[in-house]
Image (cartoon, rainbow, N blue to C red):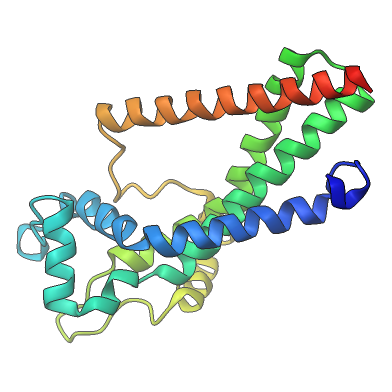
Length: 213
């Protein structure tokens, strides 16, 4: 704010902040994300092809022992890009929507939060789903009988998917990955509640600052 003479950050700076935050977080979290994807996909595979990981730590240990340390970052490219797109869509669109609803449409606090959250949710999904689809396909793929993988990389996966199903294929649900269990759902709800409280506090500070000015 001080660097912009007290004015809100422009949209491109908000987008850059989201991109940077997403990239840093994904680099650290890629190994755990890989273990999660493989454990979820394991139950859908034939018994002979299952990896039979006992838990996340066992999965990480097996990956390092059988494939090497760098294999922990298999699919890290699309994971990082997906996180960058997701954070850009969430953070930039939410902040921009708050300013629009509050300053241009003169909405109240609750209406502003609800409207901005709806907008940011839409852009988060629209920006991240194609990268999420490619990331999942790369992370859960297995070699065939001849040792060849179905995709040589993220770009190859994206081109084959586009050719086979068109652009909308990237926005379809991968039925090979089961839905989270109830515990996962509760965790997601808790994270969303925490995010809402943070957003509520941030927006309230903006309203109070505007009133003082």
